[in-house]
Each structure stands twice: as structure tokens, then as C-alpha cells.
Length: 141
Image (cartoon, helix red, strand yellow):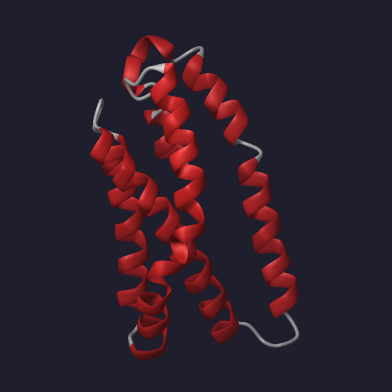
């Protein structure tokens, strides 16, 4: 719950649902960098978005931090997918691109299956940790 009450959590769920589709706002930047920069610069930006997201989630009882983390998820998700498929296209042969893209999506789906057990772990076994109960799951992901 990150230190928020049930009604606030419900509000954040609605806000997150509205923010997630807006991840496209970062696409011009990542597209420009993918076309005009080195992979290192792009990877640094993608990882910085992830680190910022995780860091903001470690700030308890902070509405601005949580909203910032939500924005990082929305934009960062698009950054990751764009960068991954751009690099895959650059590095894989046309014969193996489809197989590798399919395997990558399978891995993403398999990782998604972990979210429910990790959420349960955070709200049961790790509940005594208070607002930091989600931290081990956050680090794992």
C-alpha cells in the first residue's frame, strides 16, 4: 500500500490505468536516439528510467513520488520495447528475428506470472515490513 489508505490506493489504480497508455509521449525521444545515437546512450536512458522508477517507489507516503513512478512505468515500458526490438532487428538475421521476438515475448509473459505471487508475498509474509514490504519484489523484478 506504500503507506496509503485503501481509498487512496483505489484512486491510484484509476490514475495508473489512465497514465499507462500515455507512454507514447516519450517515443519521439527514444526514436530519435535509436536512429542517431549509440546503443550505449539508449541503454543508459532506458536503465535510468527504471532506476528512477524504483527509487521513487522507495519514498513512502509520497503522492508526487508515486505519480512520478507511474509516469516512469508508462514511458519506460515503451522505451524498453522500442529499444529491444530495434536492437533485435539490428543484431538478428531475418531468419531468426521472429523466433527471437517470440521467445522474448514468452519470457515477458512468464515474468508476468510472477506478479501475483510476489504481490501476495508482499501483502502476507512481508507485511510486517510496512511500506517497504514490496521492496524485495521490486528488486527481483
